[in-house]
Length: 466
Image (cartoon, one colour):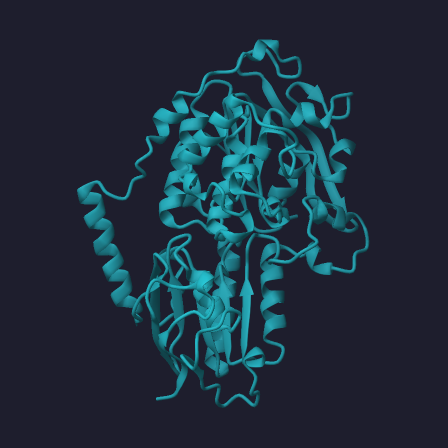
């Protein structure tokens, strides 16, 4: 049978990208592959080896692209990595760009597409010259259920009609689509043996049951105890925050957001009281992220809308810093915009100042708080590591710790589980629940996966595309 990809005793040419053992893998014509592993396991590193971005020594990697007419690896192998709900990796992006681009004519029309539309566009661009191998890193990230189904159907149709090998890089076995025939497990910077998908899923189910029976798989850190130990703030001394328990912290009064002929939000009435925990759900393009961008004043239309926050009408003389000091926020746009080559501990600590980096020296209390949240999220080992050199899942955990570090009264989490493996998803849910159960805490959370929402959710806002 034709060996499209054949790796024999593969060793990385650069020691910085090495695996713990030589890589051996053969992919035959007709097979479709999922590379599955936990965060920081080495999945993306392996994908970049397959695509030639990182090199194996000697002739360890061989390709047979027949019947392709192209000879170069770059023409036959296309690699797309999806780091967030609204785009892919790339320089020059900044936090407010998505919202500002809606206001004006912009050369980059892709910024105006929904997540599902953008995903199809990017795959279509990669397929313009019909490569032999298509490598998709996190292809389902940020997509609603319908868009995930449409993407799967698109890939199935391509596979049925073209000589195309699809290799999907996934953090969760639950995301493996039904056209996948084989799985390559990656763990601890070691690439395992290829196995049939049924065998892999059966082995995974047995492992989960074994861990459940033995009480394994939980973080050593006592998340709930650590969070409960955080002292409460004396909010009576804070001028901008309402004094009455259970007071309104957010009110939208018939809010309409439109860009040209496109209406995103139409006469939205919404009120959130202190202590409530809201889940925001709905299809791509329904306006969930737009709504949250108005709360955080990242959207240029925020000050043209009738919005009350913490009992004050937006634009009535408050400073943006008075608002942000009470808000912990993480979003796909923030994840995409963060490109600072800083130590991970500085990324986490920047949450104290609501800036991309640290503006002045941390005091002892801030140092202790930063270290506590890094411990809670299981990222203490990343101290001293460059943010740009860690995995995308680890970056997500750093930005989550950044959102919690100042102990905010209003916690806004827009797709916080993007790219996280199941263990880290479970950890983040525990953190959210423990945090939200403290006094004076209010939660707004967006996700396209019902399983991502923690049990503490007590209100739901379901949004529909206009």
